[in-house]
Amino acid sequence: MPILVLVSGNGTNLQALLDAEKENRLGGGVIRGVVSDRAGAFALTRAAAENIPCFTELPDTSLPREQRRRDLSDRILKRARETDAVLIILAGFLSILEGELIHAYAGRIINIHPSLLPKFGGPGMYGDRVHRAVLDSGETESGCTVHIVDEGTDTGPALLRRRVPVLPGDTPDSLAERIHREEHTAIVEAAALMAERLASGTEKVFEN
Ligand code: GRF
Image 1: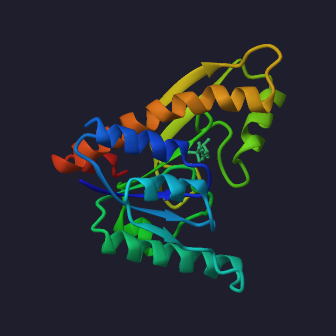
Image 2 (image 1 turned 60 degrees about the vertical axis):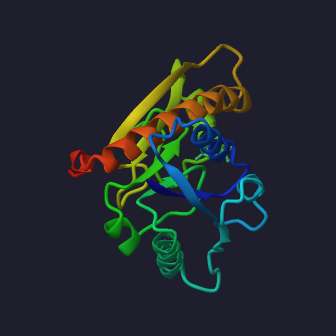
Image 3 (image 1 turned 90 degrees about the horizontal axis):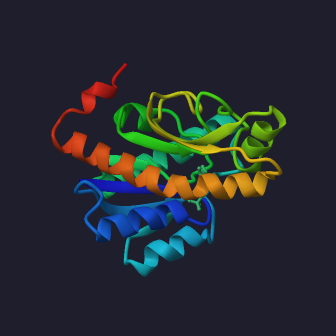
């Protein structure tokens, strides 16, 4: 089951996927390529170390925002087709996708978000901002969600969630770190689930 992984940063979630593939824990998934929307993202170094084809597709800042998103999404769709990807995984990917890519891969794009969606998701909710908002609101638990990507931001159906407690004295960093560890298990579990479902043709369960 060919997979394309999209990244923007350090790539610890990508690393979890690469390790799982090597250990046959990815439901038959094979990572065929990694696309970064940031030049020099360390995630690319991780992929290159495993001889995975790497692509850098930078947002074209000369274009107005709407066009910029469409242009980047179209280039990613091209990469997905070139690598014969059946499943696309957003593993710490910060750009917002739209257009034909979302339709061509409907039900076959997943994203990991560091909160218990639908709480603390949506435009502007990424990185530290999520954890700060969780702490400010006095929540007693947080976690991560892997969900299907639709046309909204963090709005698609959830595949799985993992919970962690918010502890007294937590800072955005300490909470982020606790959640990050759970993400590495969650993303592998969700990717394996999707790879197996897609291989057996039962992915339609996600169409809604
Ligand atoms: C993760 O917290 C993920 O949920 C968020 O970005 C972070 C990426 O971490 N979308 P990494 O690059 O996989 O280490």
